[in-house]
Length: 112
Image 1 (cartoon, rainbow, N blue to C red):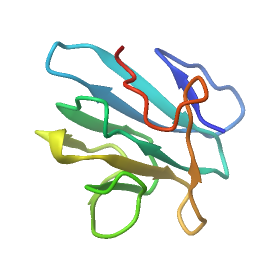
Image 2 (image 1 turned 90 degrees about the vertical axis):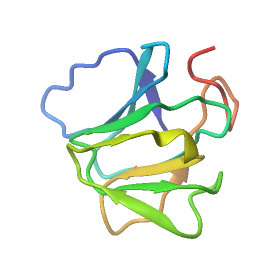
Image 3 (image 1 turned 30 degrees about the horizontal axis):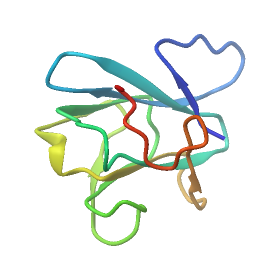
């Protein structure tokens, strides 16, 4: 399960986070818990930048389902001009991704 928060404090457990920013300067942190890997559809979210915040193994996809060709992003690196990204996968390396949902929606606009 994915947690979507503006800020988070995790004590005693490792979590994986990516920070999304849009052109208006709004930001949102997406969190995958320890031992998890999440795929989140971003096709309806305008993403000016995507930054790993201990994001683990981060992959950025032009598809909306984390399949096909991808660009890797370091766990604490930033991708700018990220409007082309339609889905992102992050978290623990070597395990399959689970779909992330927000309020029961697969491809929400997280800034709406």
